[in-house]
Image (cartoon, rainbow, N blue to C red; front, side, top):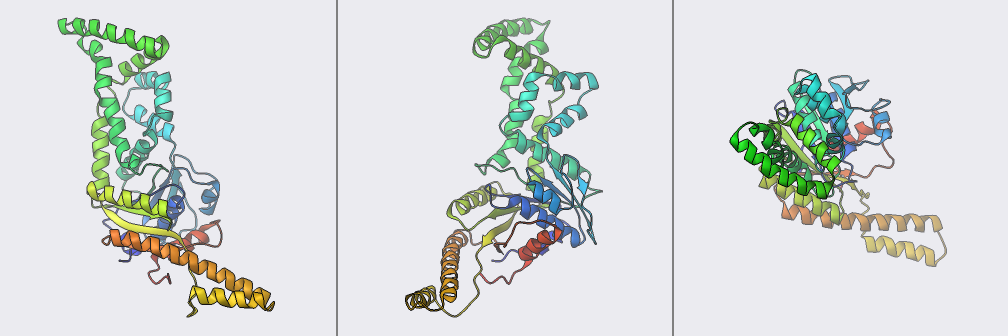
Length: 375
């Protein structure tokens, strides 16, 4: 089954495309190429990338990418903007938008918050979804958002992170730490405070007094500010499950990458997420000659043995090697499609060079939409 990319890009009911998959498979370039193609098909697009190479920003005609969408020049039909997620700045924006200035400053200057917003497991994934929610809320400006998910060794991190971070900030640990303040002045509060004192004495020995003080100050400031984190995580999850979203799994025809892709496809189906299909990057194309790999190799060996046509022999040898690569890739891809026959797939040929400009992204976009690739 072939993936019809243009049908997704031009569908007015599709507002979010999420490119996901293992690291190093070309997710970021794919997201940029999809965004450019959608814009040139008439959509108003914002591409949210996580950690693009500098050359990709330059390819889009931008000197830099930051946490604010930047318009890409030279788009004839629709419009295209691009941005790179700044995890901490996005977290700071959440604090500032849900706090008065004094409370926001208390939180932003707290050492525990600074560590949480910079390095807590799942924060990058959560903030990518937070930024997605912000962009989607401004649907008057963009009717399609293309998301490049964070590189992750575990494909489940992206789906689990919002709930995990929301559980932490709304969870039992936070409730325990804020219980004395909420119950102060009442009998139950005095009992809770006594138990809390025993609890904090233990934590002080484990964490150190200053660390515990920072945590205490943080939860005291955050208690009334972030009560809705769980609700925000749930809303983000609902946004991902909506029929207006399409997940595109990106892989390369290698064993580990396809195993990761299969695992993620199964998880998306398990969670009833809207799966658009699979993009298989960097496939080896070989012109049809009517000869088998063994015949090509035999001809190369014959020329070498006769010490004639050295250049022709070298070219035949290279052709045979590429036929072998293509055969191996097709075998791996066929195993994936046999296991997941309902997942439409689109191969994309390996490019001869890295992307350096919009024309390079257009070439990739055309390959993404080309349903007649000889592979």
